[in-house]
Image 1 (cartoon, rainbow, N blue to C red):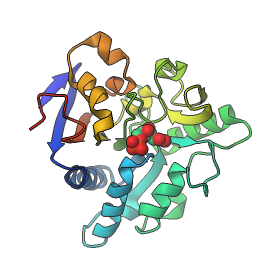
Image 2 (image 1 turned 90 degrees about the vertical axis):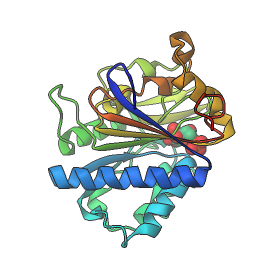
Image 3 (image 1 turned 45 degrees about the vertical axis):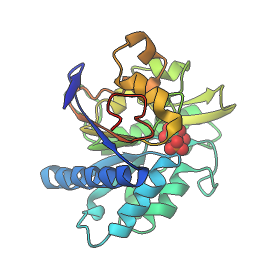
Length: 256
Ligand code: 6PG
C-alpha cells in the first residue's frame, strides 16, 4: 500500500493482461457488493476504449454464478465519443454489447452520454445535472460515485481528459464537452473533481505502449507526472487501484 497526497493507492501488477483483467473483475465486484451492502445501491461510471472489453465480457460470463446485485447498480459513463450510440466507436455501445446486454441492470438505470447532440455544452450540463440528481453528494457537494473505472492512453489521457486541454483544469463543471485537437473530434468527459470524489477508482492499464506513462505515474518526478493527465487521478477520500500487466509495468521497479 503506497500513499500519495493522502490518496490510498494500491498498485497490482499481474503477468498478463488476462490475469490483470481477473484482478480488476474481483475489485469491481467487491466494490459493487460492498456499495450495495452499505448503501443499497452502487452508482458507477464505466470506461470506454478497448482495455475494458475483456473485463466487461468476464463480468458478463461470471453472471449469475457471481452474486453481483446488478439490479441495484446505476450505470454512468466516464466519457463518450461524438458518435451515435449504435456506432462501433461508441463506448456505450461497446459496454452494452460486452456487459449490459448480459446482466440484469434495469434499462432506466443505464445512462449513456449524448455525445453526438447538436448542443454538446447543453448535453454535458444535462448529464451533470442527472448525475447530481441520482448520485448522492459528499460533504463538498460533489456526487460520490461508488466506483469509477478508468483506462489510460499511451499519452496518459484518462476518460477524455487529454494532455494540453483546458478540461484538465476544470474545477467547477463535473462533465464537459470539448474539442480534442489531437483527435480532431469532440468528446464528452467527466472531469477530475468528479473522478476524485469517487469512493473506489480502478485505473486499469495494460500493454507495452502504456509503459512510459505508467512509469511517470509511479515515479517521483512531479514535472514528468504533469505531462500525463492520469497522474491527477487522486481520490481525495477514496481508494485508487492501479491494475497493470507486466508489459505496462516494464519500466517500473514493480516489473517482476
Ligand atoms: C476512450 C476511453 C479512453 C481509454 C483510453 C485507453 O473513450 O477511448 O474512455 O479514456 O480509456 O483511451 O484506451 P484503450 O483501452 O483502448 O487503450
